[in-house]
Length: 251
Image 1 (tube, rainbow, N blue to C red):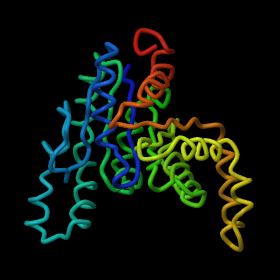
Image 2: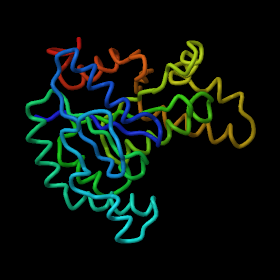
Image 3: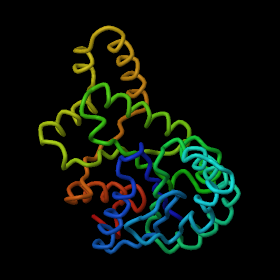
């Protein structure tokens, strides 16, 4: 059995940094893990990737050979990943069987993972009940109600697209004051009071989004700082509950 956590979020939300800090936290708790980099264009990652998509795809070669711009090359690279899905799946199976958890650090631009064909090929290669999405809520983007609802809607879209269980992680919590974190967590429980303060079409759209989010059920939001380590214990405990029923590691 392979337990997989796909770390997904908007560009700059802290996916790679969280992958690094989470694996170091897991190490202190005695958990075994496999770490995967799925970003073909990244120049540096702070962790040692056990599986690295850059071993399969040369982003710079795509740029030079096909005269592509940065975005075009990223799309081409993402589509090329589909050709290596069998190899990647076999690598994950081989290493993941002996790991408590597989951490997959997805590409910087969310659409390159969530909405390209290879993501479905990859996620459908493994059972739903041993896979989860960790969707990152960048604290810089969710500090107001419209930003919070927009990112919540994006998270819902990604969950719908990939058809996997999901947890929400608010990154860079060290950039927020305690009362700001509490306000965002309150929106998670009930966004409607804040929505009522909006005017015009924004209010109407926000009400519709709030209703859609409510339909998706009670999804926890974990404030985490990769810089200070705050919240990693709660996030780690949640992953432990998901994958090993809270036993053997973390709690």
